[in-house]
Amino acid sequence: MGGRRRQHDQLRQRFFQAGADSLASLGLIEAANRYVCPQCVRAFLPQAVEARALTLEHAPSRRLGGKAITLTCVDCNPQAGSRLEAALMRERQLENFLRGKPGRWRGKLITEDDIGASVTIVAEADVVKIAGLPRHSNPDAHRTAFDYFERHVGRSDWRFKVQLPGYDRRRAAIGHLRTAYIAAFAKLGYAFLLNPLGARLRSQIANPEREDMTGFLATTRLPVDPSARALAICDAPFSCLAVQMGRRVVILPWPPSGVDPYDAVQHTGDALGKMHGKAMEWPTGMELVLDKLVAAQQARLG
Image (tube, rainbow, N blue to C red; front, side, top):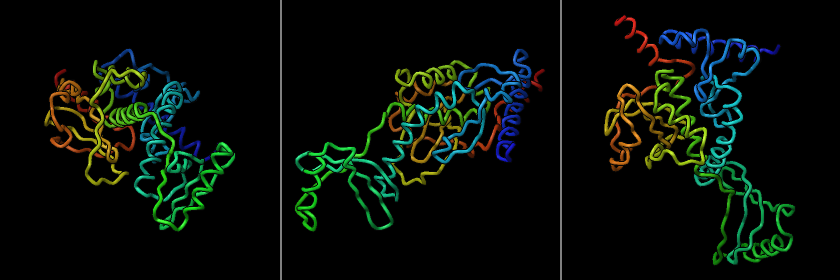
């Protein structure tokens, strides 16, 4: 067994045990020595780790720079998560292009007459290189477009458009919601998700095409490091858990408050600009801090 595979197996075992212990500490006797997948809330025996029915979940996804922080089952990750990840990747690519970040993209160059040719665009520190892809274009359109560009090289009185592949904005939004939900679970635990509002979140994530929820995603206009990630328990303008991922902020319920933030956000103008609360660092693993707090309170009362 390779060293990395062994490390991953040990991490899965550790995450499984942390989840099982947390469920037991909350008094969920029926879940003793079980791990409950945070997305579908099905319970799994310890053998599920060895059988790889439970997989390491990265939040954000590994392709977007995230690290493994919890476990989800194979039906929820990668099968369900990958569909949302694809939209997030397209969104990230478009934003990187618009920021002028060095990289490589596939797209189209379109003339003033709306004739387009497929191209590869390579942006470097101080130069942009464009190469045609004739096999991916209509031959006549490709020839006409590049004849147009060649005729206008060195002139300033001409225009063209660059078109990159689009993406499903709704799926990208639900992708952000899923990432925030997974991070909140790893940070807070089962006390965060085993409630009616948690069930509402899971239903929306499982059915991204349905618009059961609105108002959960905001984008700040402030200059923000794209790699910045944090959680914050907010008490104004309403009680919620705010999860920041770069310029995106996802609003989640803060269960101890009993407040439905998606109802509150409809009555609060510019809620993002008015939010303040206690910040927490992004989880590095199964921290489950709310579970530990609730278990300690139960122990004092019992």
